[in-house]
Image (spheres, rainbow, N blue to C red):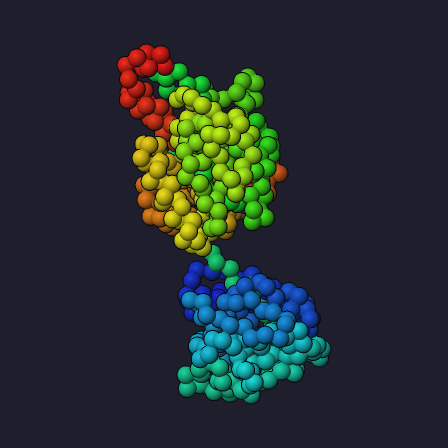
Length: 470
Ligand SMILES: Nc1nc2c(ncn2[C@@H]2O[C@H](COP(=O)(O)OP(=O)(O)O)[C@@H](O)[C@H]2O)c(=O)[nH]1
Ligand SMILES: [Mg+2]
């Protein structure tokens, strides 16, 4: 059963909705049956939708709003930037598009389990397509009402007849989900070489043979992962570990239940698959902070100094101090943190609480004071942009990813080039070259910065100590 909505009408609707979007058919009475129950099963909770009626006069009309349908007898309030409207696309067989804006967005629609699509009206609905079930007798004589058209929506001089022929006998009715859709940029927003397997192997090889700055007696570069709970810190380690191990692994506990699945401080090592040797860097995983739980400043100092032992169980109410068992008393340069990676969930950048921004700002002041280099690992690209969800190689032509990178750079005060977008392994069943490439790029940046820091520390050491550490 083909979809009836023509390309030119789709384009008109997209212009009226005011954002780039595409339509996905949810419900069609000639396919699914004309029943309120089926309509709600297929359309409730789906976000923005457009409903289209095709009547027997060859007139096409309907309505749009940006909130979900529901069945619980409540009004659908549409106060988004992309406001509700009714429309006519075709009249008596001729294209004749008109848009009718909403007057009262607190009752753009009405959801009830006995009602099909219903637009407007606290008491008088502008369009009530049908109630309960309507059978097909050649066409569908919808048992709803259009008598109050123009109550909640502004008809701009038109009337019931010039929009609908006053005819609710339809050949079909369709409901489409309106999905945000990203336009790919013509030119990438960041230069990027390629996504081929050879490229991935080339970067991987450099990371496998990586050694911290030769001037220092430091076994591993230590990268501290900081950020909000649920941002993807543990997943970032797991993803890198998988990429190096050549199979999906899940060493670090991760989860998304609002509280941290990470309860211990871990200084994770990664083993090279071919040699069995540990690689020369460590990823240090923390519990993470949240709106109500701030990173204790003293505990942060201990973390940065390398005074907190591996496997220390974080206690959110009692921060770590020098009195705790396992306290590393005289940590040397090799124990310290050499680079900090803020892990930020790209899909919630707009929703991040002020308190969390402030925490990041406060932590950055302390890190700057120590001269510690910082980057941002921006996770969950797949949730920022549907094109990237389909294919990670769209990352650098996605305007949504670009905007998220710019926003995070603004908020943190870090240069844009220090914000590295990644997609962690999460729903995949096998490794993917393009996902590995992004992960490796982020890690490489951390290690370059860690080297700079180690070099700087050596340069600043007194002569005597410098000799010992070289
Ligand atoms: N879709 C998607 N989900 C992710 C990504 N990274 C992490 N997650 C999910 O986000 C949730 C929290 O991740 P986790 O690594 O435990 O966060 P942490 O608290 O910062 O360590 C988990 O359910 C992960 O599967 C990503 O890039 N994309
Ligand atoms: Mg974690």
